[in-house]
Image 1 (cartoon, one colour):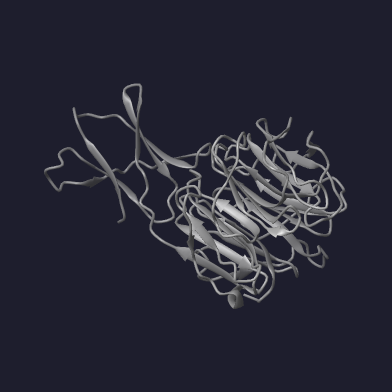
Image 2 (cartoon, rainbow, N blue to C red):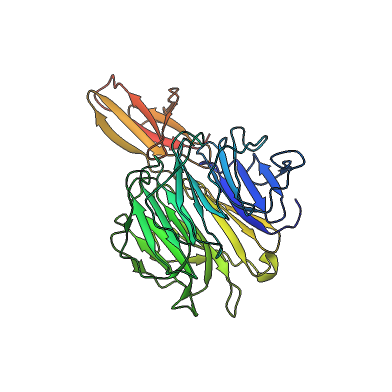
Length: 379
């Protein structure tokens, strides 16, 4: 991959499919969590699209939406192999974008990076048509969506008042939250839209920023004790518990920080400022928080991978059992056993169905015995 300033990076739920877009027209994809990359041509042969600004992906990594600083929105249905631009509204500059898990609902806002203020637009038919939402005009810096595209959160930064708005009906109406007025840089949402995380670059226009969390869909907010930084980007796992945040340093290198308990405590990945050129532009995460990705102004993309033990949930469904777990970034198989005193674990051959509302794999079983035990195990 070229060493360009990677402005955005998007990931499929399992963290296998990635797409990174750069400030100098570069667009690269990976199908193996970043081990190898393939260059994608510009969306239209001979076009001058300008630099890429941001990108978002559907849960399977096939549907993509990207914004450029040359007032265009581009979409792809084949993981970035080909692109097309449809009848998006004309704005001075496009800013952040967001997408529902199925890729049908797309949010695009005007005004990122102190560009002229503008509206937030929504499409519920994968970009075939667009409508302005009732959100006020602002310099919108970041948008996040729940998995079903119903719950939205948008943050704005300078030179206008840093505000945060939420919507519970796919952008039809918006309400300003109680979050403090900050120079917001990025916001992220859990799959159900209940847990939100936002980072700001500046406090009161001068001091370095903080990380803020909300466990009630934005009704109340808490600033935690993470080291101050010019925070640029944040991402969360599907359940909202795992957070990854990155930014640029003040006096010391600002590493990529990770929390696995919704911001109660943090661990630094100790990435050097030389590696990132001192400036993390974007971060992303797999649905289970087992894979993290960060892109930099210095021209590199790095990843961190670990095996996250999925939590297997069991619920009664009439006379059946519903077993579910977050889409894993590591291959797991569901097994069953009638008696824990034996080692007779057998694979459940039913194919899991993906619940797009919560990014959970689900299997419905009809028990034929009075008791049974289930587990997830790596093959």
